[in-house]
Amino acid sequence: MKKPNIALTVILSMILLFLVAMIALQGFAGLFNESVVNRAAAYLTKYDDNFTYIEHETQGKNLLIYFSSEKYPDYTVMVSYIRTYDEAGMDCFRDSYANRMFEEEALENGDRLIGTLYPDERYEVYISQTGVYDGYDRNTTYEQFYHDEGGWFEAIVYKDITEEELENDARRIEELMRLEDDSMDSRDASLCIIVYYYPADSEGPGVECYSDLAHIKDYTAILKLYYDDPKHECRLEKIEMNN
Image (cartoon, rainbow, N blue to C red):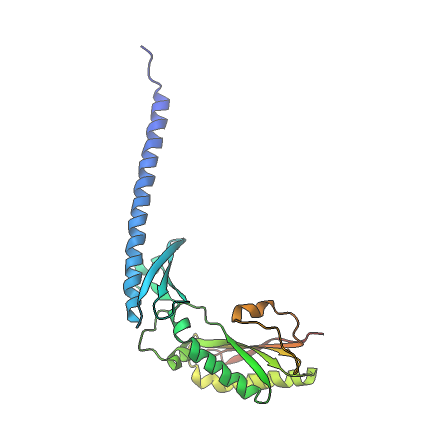
């Protein structure tokens, strides 16, 4: 009788054990993910809306979980799960819902800021709020959100401008940002204003949303100022004529 190959038997046994372990781990991970998704759905009930789970993806030990919104069907809500926070007994969910919930108010606020700076010019205002947050619910107001987070505003301004006027506009924007200090008294709040200038009689670049602004190249001048509320510092990050 042929003797069994002990080495081969051991190797095959180890492979089998490895496959069984992997299957068990995958099953555990699936159950774990399902539990987190259910908890994320429960977490979103703090808002006055109905949410439907779409999908999730892993990010290291963490998860990004996506939901549709009944109130804002055009918007996908992202919930971020931070496992290390969960293991430490801390709040482990963050969500992007406030970005859409306060979109209209943020646009009105941007219009107030840009309109104050350029009362005699034609302009268009765009906003960007892309963070995830954990401290807001159905009772939060935009004033509270702006106080805590600040805002990121970009504008297209139709104005024939010189280099000297551009420098004057930079000073006016900085003064406006400092006046906003009382509205953003938070360790996390910051304010950014970016202005693209086009000739007064121009039709402009024809962009429709904030994300399109990164692709425009034919402006005549640009200003970018960033105000860091915790430090009470304003930085002129970009000022140039596009000749």
